[in-house]
Amino acid sequence: MKPYDYVLVGSGLYSAVFAYLAKQKGRKCLVVEKRNHTGGNVYCENIEGIHVHKYGAHIFHTSNKKVWEFVNSLAEFNRYTNSPVANYKGEMYNMPFNMNTFSKMWGICTPAEARAKIEEQRSSITGEPKNLEEQAVSLVGRDIYQKLIKGYTEKQWGRDCKDLPAFIIKRLPVRYTYDNNYFNDLYQGIPIGGYNVIIDKLLEGCHVETGVDYLENKEYYDSLGEKVVYTGPIDIYYDYQFGKLEYRSLKFETELLDEENYQGVAVVNYTDRETPYTRIIEHKHFEFGAQPKTVITREYPVGWSAGMEPYYPVNDEKNQALYQKYAALAQKETGVIFGGRLGEYKYYDMDKVIESAMRKAEEELV
Ligand code: FAD
Ligand code: UDP
Image (cartoon, rainbow, N blue to C red):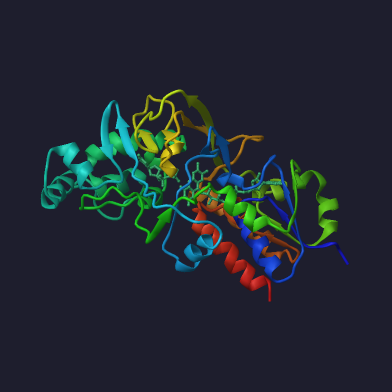
């Protein structure tokens, strides 16, 4: 008999949700986390009473009622609605692409005028869009592509928009209404008190070790549990035997400022190519903070190399094909479950990670 039913590698949302559901079924869980804190990328740090999203802006949104009820059972959510603003060389545009954006760009007033403008600018694209550039021009026309998409996207992904898959831009809504809500989902908000409230509840009753790299002591940790739930990068687990998957990483530069309100909104995107960062987050606005000071974070996209945090999987065809090889190995494992953004190599939002962990728990915890 081993001391734990599950050894969970990583303490992000996937592991934490799985552990919570396992505990409800009377299973014993050990969580090992490489970082010196729990929560993975949703971790918040308290600076001057402001919950700072340490790994980039995290806005919870979902259309899945079960997931929404689940997270609301763990924390109360506020009414925050994400409405970022894009700054293109000092010109300010509302996001996502909606009548406010079109009106500012072209001085037009009605949806019919906006449609006519976009129709005229997309006429060069015929047939199914083959890449992100074609998809973007086809959705919003060439002016918006040039000012609000091209520079931002090429900074974010480190490659030309012609070499990126179309689906990345389909994440953003295009609306012919004056509605600046960045998401189409039914439910949206920020947990009051920050995301740590949720993670702490999920991990209550688990044994947690932080500052521990599972792969450096794999045999030992394997010996402690009947099964492993692994949420780190799948290619590292298999010692890169088929080659390295690509990721994008980020550098965060956080500053405490002696002023009350720096930019008037939580997120400003810098969409020109020259500004080296993609966005500035002003954290207090996620929770309508009234503190006398403010904390801002500049987000710089960088290429990933060993030793950096792999934030975004690059889900293009080449990497997808390589991932399939690792997934085939993973499928044959009887003692290891691979889950989450890195374990499944998927550009998942939080709700989708929770959904995936719930599905796996349902299958596994009979
Ligand atoms: P993670 O949170 O990455 O957790 C994995 C954990 O495993 C990490 O803590 C890592 O340190 C640990 N680990 C890895 N290898 C080992 C090892 N060998 N040993 C021990 N521990 C290990 N989603 C939204 O819904 N809304 C948003 O607004 C949003 N914004 C985002 C902004 C950014 C900049 C990023 C990067 C992501 C954003 N997301 C957003 C996505 C969200 O962060 C993820 O969906 C979610 O946090 C993934 O949870 P996870 O458990 O899969 O992975
Ligand atoms: N994007 C853009 N301009 C913007 C914001 C987003 O071109 O001002 C594009 C960019 O390619 C990005 C994609 O839309 O990768 C998805 O944006 P989202 O905000 O969903 O990215 P995430 O929050 O995951 O970083």
